[in-house]
Image (cartoon, rainbow, N blue to C red; front, top):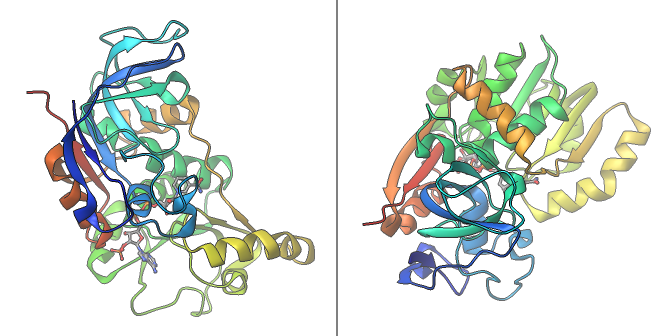
Length: 323
Ligand SMILES: NC(=O)c1ccc[n+]([C@@H]2O[C@H](COP(=O)([O-])OP(=O)(O)OC[C@H]3O[C@@H](n4cnc5c(N)ncnc54)[C@H](OP(=O)(O)O)[C@@H]3O)[C@@H](O)[C@H]2O)c1
């Protein structure tokens, strides 16, 4: 099969499209014929090896040669212990460990996969898993957003951010989106009530405070986030610098004990239930998976470059053909 592989951390030029062996599913796995796969910042981070957490399992060189986690396709073969799917079924979901999707076939366990809704294209379905579930868990399940609350989403113009803005609006929050100059109108079009250009304004220094902050690209000190929270407010780090992550791990519990503010990591758990919940909102037209660009499998390096250079508004999708 064709796959996009890499053997060292670096820019998109280290990726090569190659013929490799088609994977064989274990008893607990499904072999998926991939029709579409989306590009996430986690792919970019695992490509360049930064932040340092992207090197878990492979400090000096990547542990797994194929990136890509959010796939949509058909069941080609089901392992003996698979109960929910059979060959020919259309499915989608996130592959645990963020690997294997930039290929014509990939194996995955069934617990993070769901049936693709008939009215949804493979591309639309592939846009949802990681970004949609981050938003669902950050804004609803753990964020517990309430009508009228002030919610800030840092990185609102990217994959997870576009879902988070729409979800927070749907649940009645007053939403502020933060991203670069080129994405301000885009964030407004998603429903953001206020937008902040991070190249001109630091949302932690403008005197405003929020009930809930979802930060997909954190790099400030924990004290800056404390300042930006209202009493009883919650800040979630989804992704960002290792320095900020460690500060939150070390000082977050102390801030929680000494103030009413909660500063913590959002450890996202991919699972079928949440994937289905966010997808139902998409099917009902309440949330739109926003696809910015589509690329063929051979252009995964360009797709990753587009995302890494910060130009993507919403999701970037790879369409995989089998000709
Ligand atoms: N916690 C968990 O369990 C978990 C699970 C899965 C994934 N993750 C992480 O979640 C994150 C998800 O990101 P994503 O896929 O939504 O990324 P994305 O699509 O790249 O979106 C990130 C957005 O942030 C913007 N941005 C860059 N620098 C910024 C800054 N200083 N201030 C505000 N916005 C900024 C980017 O725009 P420009 O670059 O154009 O400026 C982009 O629009 C990744 O870091 C991933 O590793 C976490």
